[in-house]
Image 1 (tube, helix red, strand yellow):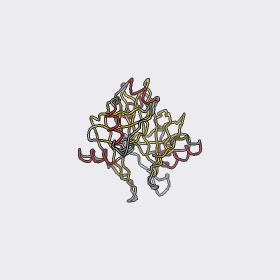
Image 2: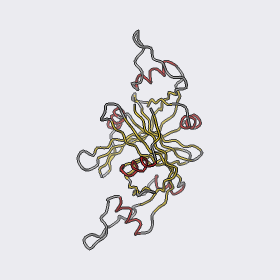
Image 3: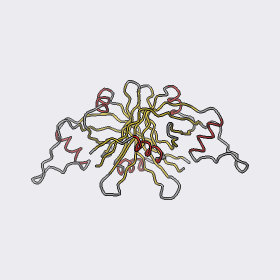
Image 4: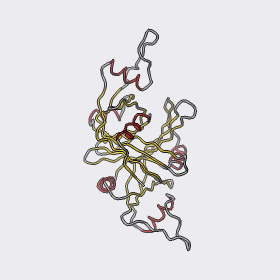
Length: 139
Length: 139
């Protein structure tokens, strides 16, 4: 049994998950990496150290983003998943980087009590999600 | 905090998970799809209806396979993940197809009491895993 999620169900799953996976291609080879993310209703925000994933997305910004929710509480396995196309955009503006890390719960909003310090070399990026598809099923 | 999983920990995670994700490339675009799988210590077995994923892997058998385990019970989020290269091989031999579906728990072993019937058009394939890497961390 497999069905399609509604637009509202897709948005709800993207908002409530914290871990998703980025798929990218590098020299015709596929890679899948799990990431901690936050979603603001149109884009996914992620931070990362530098490395192969970042190099690959800088070279080829078209990626795939996937999240799932699996519920085994009923004995059967009920699952729902969302797959979206994503466009990589690196955030270089300090205010945008701080806003993304705040959304991710990694830094507090700047205040008299708290000055966020973002480590040098930290990459913060957004994936603008398009063409979202959601499916659900039960095994 | 991020560390590397030992070989034993990698094998244990592959054996105990039931859902993984296949990453593949099609015309330089990445796709990630969740799949129900079984692992026999060297390869992952999956069944699927026909479709884009199967067409893509037939054309380009080099894929990526990823599994994760996320534990939020302690308040913090402890995660471990395995990423492997996989080589797609479609199972066409009836005995091999039956063995894979039995490993997946989808059919019973053939006996006087049970004759498995595999639906026409069902694709059964293995991914031979190489170059496995495991990581763990806590957020």
